[in-house]
Image (cartoon, rainbow over all chains, first blue to last red; front, top):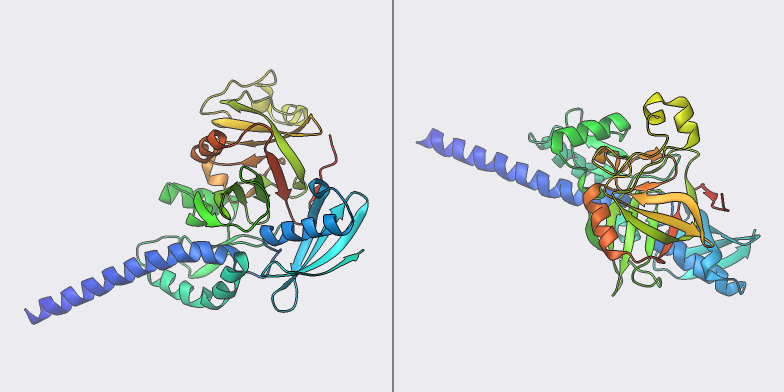
Length: 103
Length: 233
């Protein structure tokens, strides 16, 4: 009987482990999808595109993010193409544009 | 939105890897790690306890074993900060996601397959027309090099074997067909890969869902790291 209890505990432990593994892996799938230092998230790219269009009185429909990289802290550097112009936009993860400079 | 995940996920990755490795149920973990074009998407392989590249072969094996793509590429509603109007489509080619903007800073996120190296592009276009079970006409270059495609030079009727899948939305710029489409697929395991000639592919269930929501004329913003800007055919 004692042995059976140990088995039961072990089985429940394995089950819990399996279940927690499933739950964690589901969670991971979403979190690690954005886990690596990598291009800026699309919402930040679009914030910069709009800011550059406004800054240079351009058509927001023609401002396109073409490259990006994560910089120091929570700041992203995003290059925006607007007609013949290219601008470098720094934006933080809250979506606050810090600077825009023409390249 | 994404940055919040980024901060948390960096610190959690090792712990998550241990939990995934402890699972005796999953031959291949469902976790996906994605990076930009020129880098790679990775998947956790519980049998070897390593993050490995999410290659064509691994994507096929994963789909064959599980009957679906990894959770990250499955349709879901997410928070999405944007000033774009509801109904706009935003494509993040780097992470293999398509967002359909909803009201109240939400979006439906779909997993997608995008253009392979040299075939990616970026730009702002719109949906020019929509078609269910579209006819597929292989490009001339494909007809010349692929005898299988040559059989359909005159057009392959819509159906389960058609590479465009259950529906297509034709992308236009300045009133002209760009030759790029958002479409379904007869190869559902290719979601999450850089595999197409520039079209955006979803699995058939997702393309049906998107098709039912999108209106002709909808704005489509295509973002892709390092890709050339669409400047017309």
